[in-house]
Image (cartoon, rainbow over all chains, first blue to last red; front, top):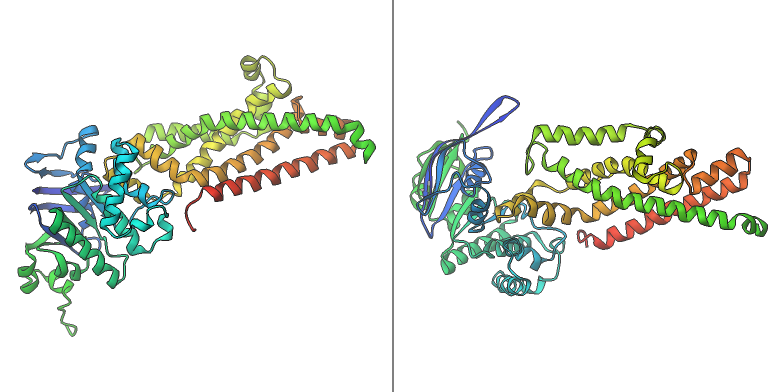
Length: 248
Length: 222
């Protein structure tokens, strides 16, 4: 279980303060596919980066399985991050390494020996349907294939949570669906909790069981995806659902 | 033509070897200092792995000062230092010290710009998998930038060919020395012309080999 408690984050650049998150409180249960939706600039990328502390919250706390991890540093922080997979909008694969070397990268960091990590890597490439591409390089793959490789990489450390930052935003709609199905399959079969950051309501409709709507650095609405989609309360949710009065 | 080579062939051959030795040794040592310096400038920059305003200013200052002194002046100014390090300010050995001093900040800037080509995304991804600062530098930044760093190395070598020829002016060995002694002081244009041709060939070969290696290393765009 991941609990974000009264999380705030303020950036200051050359004396100008910018609030990215304000008093965010969320609970993500084990096994959830938890959508965090908002328009761009709402603070959702900052929010998901607070979970693995790529961003340090200015105040508030991040509690994972009952342990307050907010102050973690060094070795402790690295070990925590290794238990949380992450995938990105631009995939962020290493261009100079083969597909297999990309998938096994988190294991290389941990110091596993080559034979073990390659066996695990091939197993994961099999799972995402790209075992035949193991010796190729990312530039030889399509966007959807690259995202599958990065999903395999995210699974390398057998994480209990995967953070998805706009994971399908750079993909076309057919590829989006196949990537979402893969994420749902991993959630169902391996019990991996998914935290899905998106600006596309369709992603929430397709796979999320819970959703939080973020607008202007604050959570404006949260609940089961079915309830929120059926009866949106916040103005921004209605806008994201496309329920706008065009004449207004 | 035949007579020319009979008389100056050995001289030009030795000069070429001396130039190659000077430049190769200086480049290797300059990279040993310049790569860490370039990495330090990069990782201490604001928003990078280990932002540190003070250290970043110091490293940046070292690089800029080194790069703002014209080589011919550096060469003369460093004579006492060169004598202290290698015992002489003359010949090939005497030229290597100023070449290293001039090349190190040049290499640092080159490495810094290679590392800057790498987007912040892959570094963030590596951090998200628990990579330490050292692992990010070694396994992501340097490894991913290797083709670009190799391209920088051929530029460094070519620049040092030019510098090494200037070192001829203060009695360092090599092609520059030959060009000045024979071409300038004795008005032997043919010898000077021969050194120019050799330098052009050296530069062309260095550039071609550098491009070849960089292309073979680079796994993008295949």
